[in-house]
Image 1 (tube, rainbow, N blue to C red):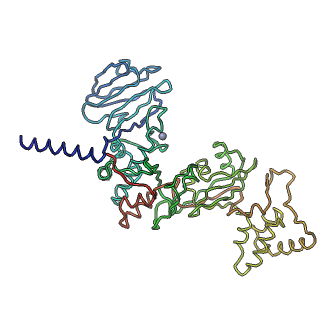
Image 2 (cartoon, helix red, strand yellow):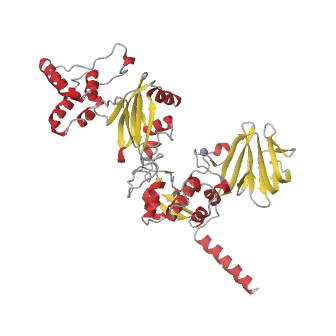
Length: 467
Ligand SMILES: [Zn+2]
C-alpha cells in the first residue's frame, strides 16, 4: 500500500512537472492509405466499426468493405454511413494485409471512399524513417532525421484538409508504410527525440529535407518561390561520397519538348539549352530552353519536374549536346588556350559587338582552329564599315534560331549547349532544400550531434520539446 501511495505521488509529481514545463499531449496525425477506392479488407482478432449514424458493428478476422454508393459502405453485409471509424480491440489493425497502429477512418470521396490511418505523431514517424535513412547509419543522423520528419509532418498537418485528412502516404507528402516499415533502431531514434521539433519565430519550421545536396543546399525561393530565412543555401562542411555524387542523364531534344509540353511549356522540339542563372555551389537556378516553337526561361526546378525528378536527379548540372556548341562569348573565350588570351578578349569584344553571324559563331565552336581566320575577317569587315553586321536571319526562322537574339545578349549567359541529344551531368539528388541526408550522415560520422546538424541546415531555428 505504501509503495502504491509512493507511485501515486511520483506520477502526480511527474504530471505536474510536465504541465509546468508546458508539455502538451502528443499530437495525432491522419494519413491516407488508399484514396477513392471501391473495396478493401480490414483485419484484427476483434474489431468494432462505428458509423456516422451511431450504428456499431462488431467483427472478427478479415472483413471486406465495399462501397455502397454515395456515402454508404457495406461491411460484412451491413450498410454503414460514412464516415466510419474502425478500432481494433486487441492487437494491430490490418488494412489490405498491412499492419498499422492507431485507428482507421473510412471517409466519403468521389462516390467511393478513402481509408485514413489516424495515429500519434511518433508512431507515424516510426513508419516513415526507413524510407529516408538507413538504420545502419550513425545514431545522430537518425535522430536528426526523426526531428526533421516530425517537425515537417506537424507543420504540414492539414495539407490535404479539403480531402479530410492531413497527409498522403506518397512522395507528395512523405512515404509512409506503417508497422511493416518499422525498425527497432529507428524506433529508438524516435523515442530518444520524443517531442523535439524545430521552431522559427514562434512557429513550427518547414523542415524540408532531401537525399544529397551535392555540397551546397538550395535557396527555397529558387525552388518553390517563397522566401524563408532558414531555407537559404548553406555549404556543407565536409565532402562525402553517396550513390548520387556523380550522375548523367541523356535525353533527345524531341523528348524534352514532349515532356515540357506535358508540363504546359510549349517550345516544341528543343535544340538549345542555356543556363541563365547559377546560384551558390553552381546550382542552376534559371534555364532557357529554345525549341522549334520558341524559347522560354524557366526555373531549373521546373525543368527537373517536367523531365522527371528521378532522371534529372538534381539542379546541380552542366548540359552538353551532340556536337556541343555553346554559343556564349564566355564559352568561346574559355575554349581559348591561355597564350591566346589577348586574341580571346578581342574575340569576345567582337562577339559582343555582334560582329559575327550565327553560322560563324557555330562554325568557330565546332572548329576552334578557324577562330583566327574569323577574327581576321571580322577585323577587316570592321575596318570597311562602322556598322556591325547583325546575325543573318534564316528565311524560315523555324529552321534555325526562331527568335534569335543578338550574340551580345547571348554573351551574358553562363553557358549552354545546342544539338539534338542532350547530356546532363550532375551531382546530388533531390530539390536540395534544407537537410541533406547524406550530408548529415557525414556530419554524424565526424561526431556532430543531431542538434548541431539540424541547426546547421536550418540556421536561426530553435529546438524545442513540445510533448
Ligand atoms: Zn500529399
